Length: 376
Image (cartoon, rainbow, N blue to C red; front, top):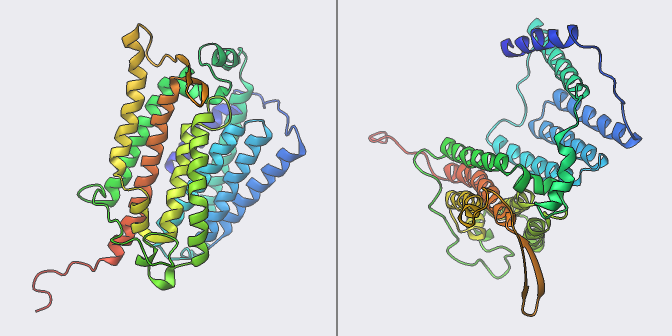
């Protein structure tokens, strides 16, 4: 409450006193109005819901509505990333809430509740006003106007968003993927007391003849779903193939290493949900920390390699050559930087699923340690 009150009184007061109300269009098309209505309805319904799972899904509705707004604004890359991130967030929230009560605790209608509601509404209004004022305050020509030309001339790509991430503003991306590695390490350290889950518990056998997944036989019969196992078997490899397509196509079409890594992470998450923690280790028999380290190393090496040839850090070079039986190949060296991002995102997802999924399952399955002498 103290933090939000400072936001309301200082930046809020300055925004209200020293600035005229911004001029703006409410919408460009009826579709944008419809997407905004979905977001608002989902947000209100989420605050009114008393069921945890229902509220998580309703919060997800607001995120998917934002993806629809991105798409209507002509930003398919942002829409794709928003959909993937929202899906991952939805699944992670559900994994976390498995050990919590299904419903929120009922609170009496006291004056303090009205006080919290007032602070929330005022904070939302002030943030919206500041966003509109900041958008309306631009007077100079934005630097992004030249990105389209730069993306083709020295980024050698037609997808401005992806070229911006791996070339024009690659320094920002390098810092962001380093933060991802730190975040993944933080998540793992919160769950595992001594070390990361490096002891992979792969299935001892390939499963029975009527099993669609290698380790599904390790799951209790009442928790298995034949339909889910069959669906997982059918879509897993297609998701991996789609992720690889997004990785290589991202320089000239919607996609990129970040989106591709999220798709691989979702594929592994589906394997875990269908077959449990043993199935996850069978699908990805590699330590998540190692994968994060390889990805970050690959991105850094790609950034520094141009120095050995007289170039600048993170400078991209276009490589054109011919392969037997394949034909001409066009590759930009920033692809290897994007592959590093791809591996880091997969490592992050693997760390999250092993921590919040398999790690919690293992702790729940193992009996609690009995203090010495307690049985006597």
